[in-house]
Length: 274
Length: 306
Image 1 (tube, rainbow over the protein chains, first blue to last red):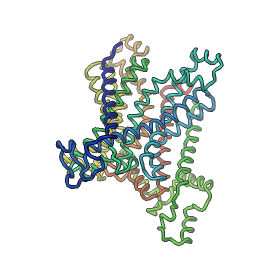
Image 2: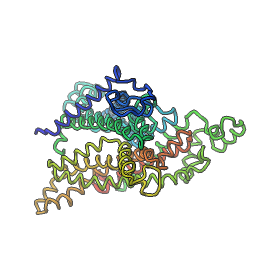
Image 3: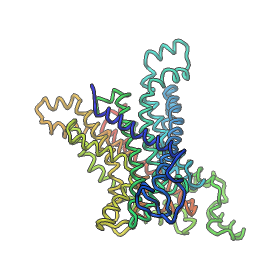
Image 4: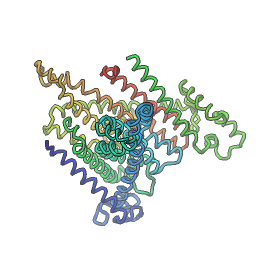
């Protein structure tokens, strides 16, 4: 059955996410001004042709900072995602393939990891090694890992009893080969949808950690940091608090829409309930 | 049921034990000597040694862990390295702000999300459903601390109705609670809607309609109670986001709660406070999810038997 609303969410999500990625890549080669260039004379300038979104309290160009912030945000979230999926998917696949005590160990381990929200892990790493973007990547990734482990295990358990796995086994294939050649390709759709959603959550988490000073450190521009700086000027220049928040929300919205659209496309079982 | 309960309790204790060992190991391999932080760099070696002894830092790790846990269980959280007051006193004053904030946010979010989710499911495909789910989609995408800033802009800067920050009675908790609750409510409303839609397709709902119950009665008496079971699980999972959110939102509103304490403790390297707080917060996530598991089994006895 055609569901136009979900096609809309797929394409709108893809368009927003694509635009954000393009802006992040563009900032590598071009921004209107250097994002960290201080220009005290033109501090707190209103939006104009010279400074599209105005300048901040020390005269940095806000549009340029937002562009560089996009790059930072996407990079941190992407690496966090790689950490989360890189740990979670193999562990989940292993648990499903071996069952028994291995399965139990992985699942109890993921229960334990769930008890440490990214913020708590970041707090511990910051107390240990000082705050930084690496801190955020690791903390967010470690919190995402159990999500991937559980999802991979659950989906893989549904594939193992299928006939083509039995056929592969009678052909003498081992657990690893079966997992790589038969199980993972069959659950890739579910994993891609989850990766999109976790990407959105990672963007939110990175912004939150940078906001409280546990993530990306100045002078590297980051959306969360910009909001923290804006707070000091909330009575005199409230507009500073608007743009970075819009950038975060728009990026997360784009990824969420993309995730919803992909879910409909790749996971037809869920269509009935939605 | 008894076997299920015993199994769950054993897992609870093992997880709590593992979490506390993890936190202890991570924070005790830390470079930096708490005693020299307390006494300053000019302290004489014998004073340092005396302080080491007083803090128990001259004992090996394997002795310090059980001592720390035993003290925790007695309610003795140690003495703050920087404030030189019992950590338990610091925590008590802060929990009195953070806990009501978190509970208020949770209550607001449930009060908003469940009626909206059920409403959207009942009106599936109508304009009102699309509208509610559209707003929920936006709500999921907005970071709670930015929402907090926007609320301050509107209700404190523009209208002057509510305080922008600091703690001056329960009124100060209103804006932060709303900022925490709205994004949570958006997620919960989406979960509620799809869960209700799923139960509406079940045989027992059709039976209820067939025996002459009205649509509304079948919805509220038969579909909703069953649909809420998975919603409770999501609420349990949301608890850890709520904790992290509370800690961040306290910074937006300058509330002297656990969140402020944790950041002060990091800045001042007050490790015992960091260690106690992290264990306390991680422990509360574990306990809440244990309670959710029990509630789940109580509501759906098939699970306990399996």
